[in-house]
Length: 208
Length: 292
Ligand code: SF4
Image 1 (cartoon, rainbow over the protein chains, first blue to last red):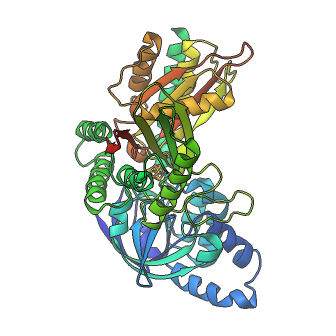
Image 2 (tube, rainbow over the protein chains, first blue to last red):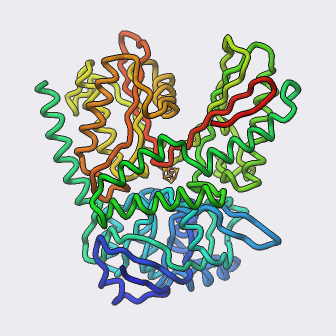
Image 3 (tube, rainbow over the protein chains, first blue to last red):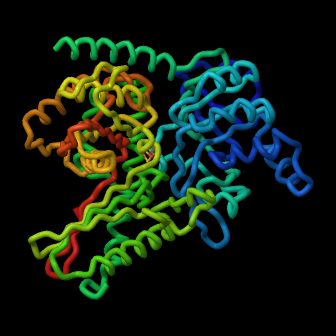
């Protein structure tokens, strides 16, 4: 098991290989569908508008050498303070068109989600020294317990609770590296093997 | 509602139980899967985390998964109680459950992309009423998450690509194809519901309804029972494993049904349910409520 402290260096990320079990501590930010679309349209395809400069700076500072968590949490508000109640990963593949650009632009060192991502992201992980980390889908209460502090939230009104940028401090957040910075993807390996078995199965079924 | 004044509060509790705790048969199936994996393997690791999460959710009374899904209700009721009032109370209960963090605000306006914020919207919750010939009320609730819903699919046979004809072999091939395509995306190990026949809408709805069945509930149709067993065995040779990390358990259960079809149509619909198969039953009898 490897411990990762955020912010994390490119060197440390390069040491990770698919299958490595990690525990992550430090500050990260949640972002899913609306957030990724926003990052692209407002900060990558053009430079930030003056009224968005503040948000841009704040996000840049957590993203640089930091991690994005694909998560749409259940959040409770008690006495003006937010608390994560349930916060497992969401399916990452939906961010495939965006993620490589986000990694490149902001210098993100890790993407945490579930289900893995495609070749474009794998390529970006290699080129810009980043990794994809898989958290256990559905393990929401357990993962919420490793969120020790909700530091801030951006775009909550605009995107709604699940889709907002939540800046959180985590401690010993469990994940497994499934795409490393050397071009390896556990998802590709498993899919290739299962498809061969599947083709074999249907040949046999067809023959009766 | 008038017939049962506490109905709304009962449904809130019903939602809470469904969201924070798994049915016994589902939990047992996960235990069995855990026993089958090699200790220390990635699959074993995933199942340990899942088991720990189940324990914590129950203890803390927090949602097993943050995606509390589409809230699918099936209500079987005697003649008498107003289904309009019942429906209004169920909607209120969903709002209240969202406020209490048993549910996530899970209704996004598809045209404006705005989250309604209170957990309800068009077809959320999704409520189906059926009058029956008994004097008690039976309500079934399933929380069907989006990740696994995205893995659901529908085939129109014959399927040229898969060489799947309009027969039991063709059905077997396409259901396996759906499982293989899902990989770990539906938070496997999952539960497969399938339906043969019907029109596009009834077929998918019947496939999803299969997730209500208890795992030990044997299919009354011998051909389907045999098909379920074959699918279960073959799917578990695919080695996709928990979360798609590889391993022995790819599916925890397979349940199927059939509907009559039009001569021109032959749909096979597949619904994927994640390991967090949150379903429960609520009964109302003689003014008392019970949750199973
Ligand atoms: S598929 Fe199920 S377990 Fe996975 S995130 Fe969705 S609701 Fe949760």
